[in-house]
Length: 347
Image (cartoon, rainbow, N blue to C red; front, side, top):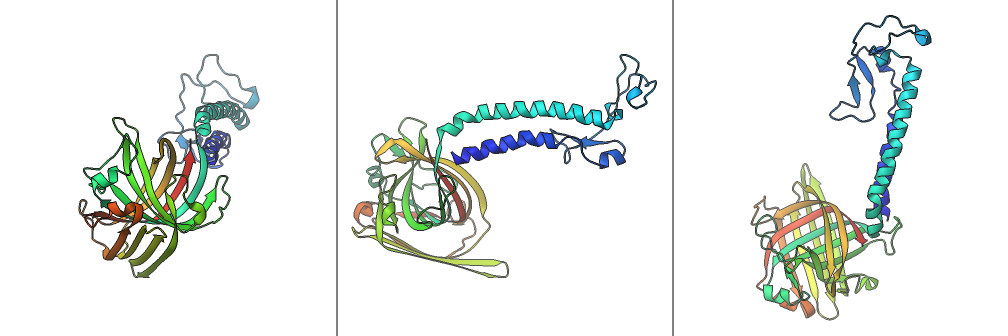
């Protein structure tokens, strides 16, 4: 519930911030034709509005609390005593803020109860997009599901992703530090869709993890890697940032995935996603991955960015994933995620 509590709290604060926006500035009393900070302003500058006093007739007289005004005249309210202006503004904005808070809580209550945050993590990722044998891949999907293959863009032709993950900081529900607080893993993910529907997302079909307690995991597909090694380095000289990564995972039953890469870092693009990850053994169930991330596409034959990959090799196969890596697979994108913030929630 934590993620939605933050959202609701944010809107609650917005409501009460209207109270703080009541006239309190000194500049508005010293500089002519400048009004006070307004509570809700569209396309304004720092919430300060110019005055436009309108008069139907001249005010005959005004002397503080003894002012006598001709009935029906329009009044420049900025000429009223400051105390009265403040009291009226405070009352109006108190009512408005209260209504706003109530409506906001009513609006977000169904969403808050719909999702339960399981975990949050800060990660570094290196992702390799593949085109593997379609028939072999289809055998790893549940009945009634199919791959979704992009026909354009950086993911063009990709039907399988191999993602190496350094989970640098892991939090459980409520923001508590998880045990263990950091892990490393690699998994294979497929973009999928329920056949004949718009029900789409991704499916993790296999993974290797350095923690025995993380296997088989929520999706039931992780294996404990009896060999699990990871090394990442970074160096900077002037404006050039270089990096190298070495990953090696292998299970006792023969499944293995490894990567060695050296690269020059390019400009990263910020992105965000909210994706369903379906359970392979029961696709009626899913977890939602909500992410905030930066991606540096280092090599891609479709979008053709500057080729920043200097050295690259990988190995994969054995056991359950042998048919996917038969030597005919093709790499279609090399991507690094220097930071990747992920929240996992369940319906």
